[in-house]
Structures are given as C-alpha cells and as structure tokens.
Image (tube, rainbow, N blue to C red):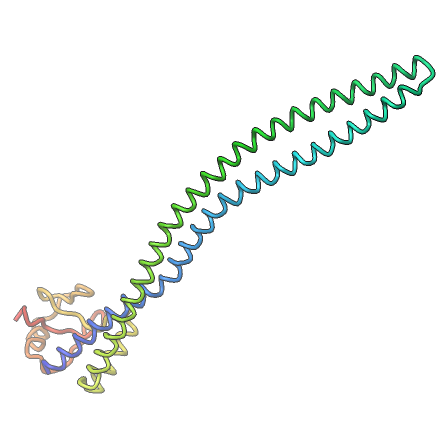
Length: 237
C-alpha cells in the first residue's frame, strides 16, 4: 500500500506542476497581446506627430493658394484702375487693392507661423521616433523572453506528461479512478497529508482511530470533511 500512496502522491505532484505550466502557457497569448499593444501605442506617437506635420503642410499649401488668388485679384484691380474714368471708381479700386494687399500680408504671416511650427513638429517627430525605437527594442527583448519561456515550459510539460504516462500503469485502477474523481471536484488536489492530527487541506482534526489506521497504510481513507484522500507523511512517522 505504501507504494500505492507513493505513486498517488507522485501523480498529484506531477498534476500540480502540469497545472501550473498550463496556466502559465494559457497566459502567454495575453502577454504577447499586451506587448503588441504597447508596440502599437509607441507607433501611434510617431503617427500622430507625422499627421500634425501633414496637416501643417496642407494648411501652408492652402494659404499659398489663397495668397496666389489674392495676388491675381490685385493684378486685375490694377488693370481696371488704369482703365477707370472717374475718381470714385479709382478710389474704390485703390481700396480693394489695399485690402487685398493687407490680406496677403496676413496670410504670409500665418504661413511663416506655420513654417516655424513645422520646425517644432519635425523635432517632435524625431524625438517620438527615437523614443518609439527605444521602447520597441525593449518590447522585442521582452517578447523574445516570453517566447523562450514558452518553449521551455512546453518542453517541461512534455517531460512531465511522459513521466505521468509511465506512472499511471503502476497505480491500481480503482485507486486511480478515485483519485481522478476527487481531483476533478477539488481543483486538482485529491490527496491531503495529515499534519499534527489535522487534514492539511481543510484543517479538520482527525479522530485518533483514523490516525492509527492512516499510520498503518492498509487502506484508502477519505477526510470526513473535505473528502480528500488522507495519508500519513513518512517524515511524521
């Protein structure tokens, strides 16, 4: 019977390790998604800065087109001014020309302002690009580390599964069936060692008669409270 308990205990140890590894592996896709999210966010900083520059350039082009339109109007006004016959018409055109020239001055001031802003935006793009590159280098290392850990855990899992397969035939079918049934109900923990006369899982005190039977290791005994398989650790004998 001692051998049966040894094998059951070993089986539970393997199953606990397998569960830990499976949980770790299950979390890896989410971890990689988080890394990708941070990567995309670092890209967005650069994209937003470049969008600002594109908008700045578009604004300048639109202003230049507007300024050119006004200049063409001024040229027409000047031709018309040379052709007018009354002083009133002349003064009206002079006023139109003056207002148009003032408008050009205002447009050109805005263009200069946008050009200065473009210099700041280009600096922002360079800084954002450098920052994104630094972040992405770190994220690449982090991702490589995660993938390496996944590879290692998968190899550990493969070896543990092989060990489990070798162990299963050594356990009597009825005891294996009981183990599997309890394990499914008790979150993968089917066995519980008795520590200082208590079930170590639910902390219920074990009756003296049951303690004596456990020490003899002659039969499977379940905890009266949590239903797990009790065993007397060899170190406690």
